[in-house]
Amino acid sequence: AALTEQLAVLRNEHAVAMAACKEEFKAEAAKAKAALSQAEAALASESKSLKKLEAESEKAKASGAKGAESAKADKARLEEQVSKLKKELAAKTGEGDASKKHSRKLEGELKDQAAKS
Image (cartoon, rainbow, N blue to C red; front, top):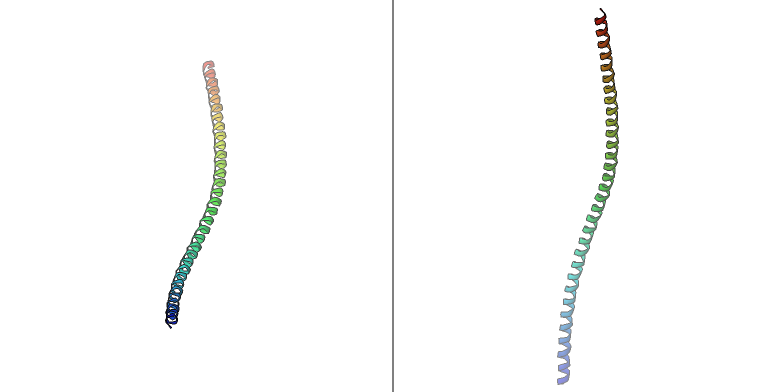
């Protein structure tokens, strides 16, 4: 009889301990599930941020390429303008030189005519 009582007490203690373990396991599982959900949400947020940064990077690369092409075109256009202005200046300088020579020639002719008269 004593052994039967002891066995009943042990079974009861075992059942109580098993119930406590089961509740503890449920609580730990709930915590782990919540932590997993938070980690998944953080990962999704980081993934979204990464995709946004990648898109901005691609946009910046494209903009940089367009900017470089635009700068090259501007440089070529400015070089062309400088060349054109240099040619115009050279032509005008040449005209100025020719005009001076012509003026000197006329002055010389006038002096000759004045000397003859």
